Length: 411
Image (tube, rainbow, N blue to C red):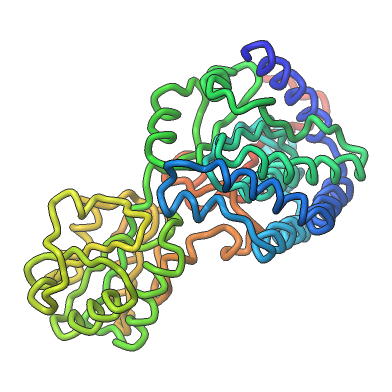
């Protein structure tokens, strides 16, 4: 396995050098051809997915949902690649330019990161999203999907590589380990000669392992412990729509709300009843339990739990600063939302909360690169170095300085 991964790493480094100078038109042609191949091979992808689903054992409801592909999700993958192709090329942009008094012309130009390793669980669509974004940004990618999605991911990767062939780009721009052997992850995390950054996407166990073992810089978030705060000025009907969507549209995604903070006591009964009647388990503080006997007592650990399920914790807060303090103590700096008609309160929330994504009068489920106009995302970064929030093609770049002179020497 070590030899196989070293070979993949060398090939990826060589392909990255080729891709870094590829014309925009060639990259976009590969993306569009890959999208078309996904549509044309939809039944092959679905059959591969059925094999994965039949073999899936011991997955949580959220993980199983992420594994499922259907015609709509396949169309969404293809559409995502088309949208990535339509984006401006993030490579070769002049970010800054300055003329020095000595006549030196200094330009700051965007360049690819190089080789990106993506380690992910269950969601085979990550193969298309991550592969497409890496291609657009001139980066080679090593895509290590989970063993539970092996056949689905391979079928999607075959389509992307067909797109590369159609654009005369090296097939090695997008690669994956040859088997489900878990040792591949360990080798990837130590391949400092070949991989420039690692992006883990999955559950806490996977991400914790990557954080502990990686010798390579990371774009990652550990958990999405997201909050929706209902300010006393909130329009109740708007709040009801947002809360149900934020929690229940897809409970298993990292943008789902896990804790509901409510300021006005009068809002609590309606919001709690909506959640319960929609089939969501509610765990609440004393105030939340007092409005409905079906509410279960919240334990201390509930406030910092990413359920990824039809479960939510609910708390009555004394005001906006109490809500902000709760988020600061228990949140994971991923996504938070405020529902309020009071603009001053909204602005105070935006300035004070230190999370990667902040929403005003909108569902936390919009925490997604596609919804941000990025075509797709390779993940959400909650760190503060280099990239924060949805990581799209533009965030997968670095820069270099190009200095042009006319014979200057330094005194």
